[in-house]
Structure formats: structure tokens, C-alpha cells
Image 1 (cartoon, helix red, strand yellow):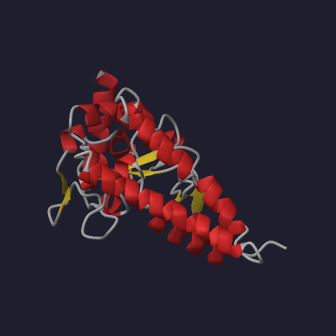
Image 2 (image 1 turned 90 degrees about the horizontal axis):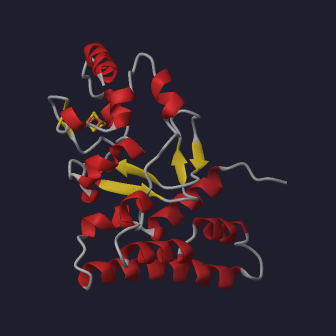
Length: 221
Ligand code: SF4
């Protein structure tokens, strides 16, 4: 504990509070952040999930990678990557005293500490939802029906004679995802702003990212 406090003091002392890190995108959450969600410092409406199989930028490795499990992140604001808890122009963090673990580990002049732990112990939706009867089963079922490994496979085969059927399957995935979101809000009374955490970003949006990624990759022979 004393060691943690000392580390935080060093980190704070070396932070010039320029806000640059906070403008590069909100942090990904780790298991140590679970209580911050449970206690409400971080509300699920402030979060979104990058689901298994999605393309996401990896600041440690560089470039885009396909993620292997949930990455839960803080949303941006104003249509930008800037973390929604950054207060501008003061460059103050609205939750500084209880900011997530990645923000505590990041020292912009020496990112080694963050890099070593960046992929370890990430918080996943099941860590927060598994005990909520009915909801977790719905989220899991959505994951199976809107599986991004399947979507990637469809993208890779999306040419030639079977193309119409592949387009139909992709359209069905988009339709199911949109309809489930609509029903969960309209009939389940769930806040619309929570959907990007519960079900990840809309499949229609993710498909556009897949297509962009496919056209920017060098074609294999
Ligand atoms: S939670 Fe606070 S410190 Fe962390 S990125 Fe957001 S504004 Fe910056």
C-alpha cells in the first residue's frame, strides 16, 4: 500500500498534466478496475467493449491487431478519441482520485511499466455480468450469433458465385444485432447508452472497419 502510494506520488510529480495521453483514447480496464465499475465511479454508459475478433489499434505493438478477448474501454467525447473524463481546457481528470489502473501506470516519459502489464488481467464483460440472471445469457447468445471470426470468414469468401448468400448472412447479422439493441432498450428498459458496453459496438459499424481493413491490407497470393 505504502509502495503504491509512493509510486502514485512519483507518477503525479512527473506528470505535466498536458492531457496528451487522455486525448489518445480512454484507458482499457483491468480486473483491478472492477470495483470502480461496481461502485459506480465508472458507469457502464461511459464504457464500450471491443469484442473478441475485432480489429483494434495496439499502442504497444503498433498497428491494428485482432483482439483475443473483450477489451473494455472508456468512451471518448465530442466524436473524438479524447477520454470523456478529461475536463478541458484545464486538462483535469474528473475521476483523478479514482482513475483506472492504466492511467496510474502510464508515465509518458517512460512507458515501460504500462507496456509490461498492458495485456495482462484485462477486465471482461463476464467479470461484471456473469451473475446477472438472464442478461449474461443474452450477451453470450449475441456473441455467438454475431461472431467476428465468422464475419471475418465471410469477408474472406465474399467473391465469386456464393457472394449473394454471404451478403445475406452478413445482412442478417447486422439485422439481428440492431433488433436486439432496439428490444433491450424498448422492452428491457436498458439505457441506450449502455448498449455499446453490453453488446459491443454495432455490428454494422464493425463491419465497416473490417471492410476498411481488408482493402488496406496487401493481398496474399
Ligand atoms: S480517466 Fe482521467 S487520467 Fe485516465 S485517460 Fe481519462 S481523463 Fe485521463
